[in-house]
Amino acid sequence: MSIISLVKGCPLFHEIYDHEVEKILKNCVVASFKKDDHIIKQGDSGTDICIILTGEASIIVNKDGERKHIATLNSGDLFGEMVLLNETQRTADIVARTNCDVLVFGQDAFYELYSKSPQVFSLLALNLSRLITKRLKQANKIITDLSETLSKKAA
Amino acid sequence: MLELVFDFFSTYLIEFMTGMLALGLILRYAAYKSSLKNYTYFSTFTGEIEKALVEHQGFSNKSENTDGYLEQLLSDVKDKLPKRSIRQGGSAAKNGEKAKEMGANQVVSLRDYVSGEGSLFQSVRGEAISFKSPFPPNYPEIADRILEKDDNYNKLFNFLPIAPVSRLINVLPSLFVVFGIFGTFIGISMALPEIAKMDFNNLDTSGEILTSFVLSVTYAMKTSIAGILYSLLMTVLNTIAPIKSLRDKTDKKFSNCLENIWMAIHEKGNEEEQTVEYLKQIYSQLSKLAEGNAVHKKNNKKVS
Image (cartoon, rainbow over all chains, first blue to last red; front, side, top):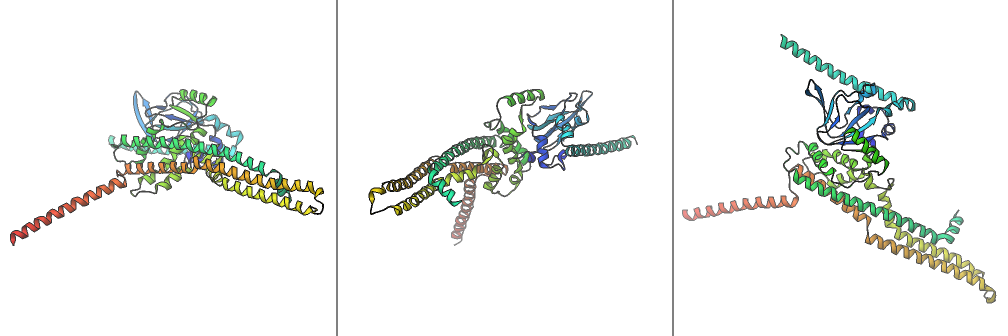
């Protein structure tokens, strides 16, 4: 099995050639987590970006002692990408719902590309912006729906 | 060019054949060892899958939640398999530290993951669609597809494809015989011109020519003997420890395991059990018919 087939479909590597993806990922590690293990803890600081290879994980936000399930991550989904924008403090818990294998690569591997392979670096940055824009759109939709619900309730 | 080849083989054919034998033996040993290791690995894999199938008999909606069921089976099996390619030494220690730091159960390099269990498991997951099919899929074909992607199963020393190596090892005995015959002809072709140089009227001066003739004929014989001996050795080894049949056994075992998974997902017994079930149904139908006939006959008698 090739490295490429593992990360096939991951939006971060969209439009990047296979051999370039292999170069980026060649020094990465794969961490295995058991069910209910914390992959990332809210408030911790870290510089790793993760891609789920197998299994499922939940994004949970702790606020005022309350744990809120935000979304479920499946195979191929990416998390921790905010460290690329210098947001090194984790903003949510990522908890394994099943046994999970997670591909982990440090932000250094990303920044090294700036001098070594600027084209790939810019494509990664573009993909990251696309990803964040997509999430922002989803967040906007949720906010709009919520405000509509609230105004209906108020009326 | 032909002259050069002829010169080479007329001098070094036996050494060339010995080199080929040594290479053949090394490749054979490595290929057999690798096939045996894979056989053990897949035997454990199938055995553990069978156990997991029994343990998860109560899993609900297997045919609808095939991915979940497969995931469950594979995660049960994962820790019980022999490790395949985890590097020892510095990187293992470094990965151990990383695992502690991340709170993970285990950390391996991506290369080890790709060449280890991860690869096989990913390939099995990739075939989930075949398991979802309500009709029995072609298990040997799925097994082939999965095993084709497994570098441990297909490559020797991580780069040499094992299937062509195995085929080459199988034809080596015939090649040795061919080289033996080739050497015989070279020897004879070297000897015959010597005879032509002989002066039959003055045999005393032809001593050297006769010696050279005999040496060439000896060379011809020696290459044949070496060819036959090497061929015999390889044939005996191929018979005692066949690589292909070991790999075929592994393929079959794995294919049967996939069949069992499909049957567990669709809650069907194997063909024998299904036949017994059908026969029982036919028997009960026939018994009912026979009973009906007997009642009918009784009623007819009463009427008459």
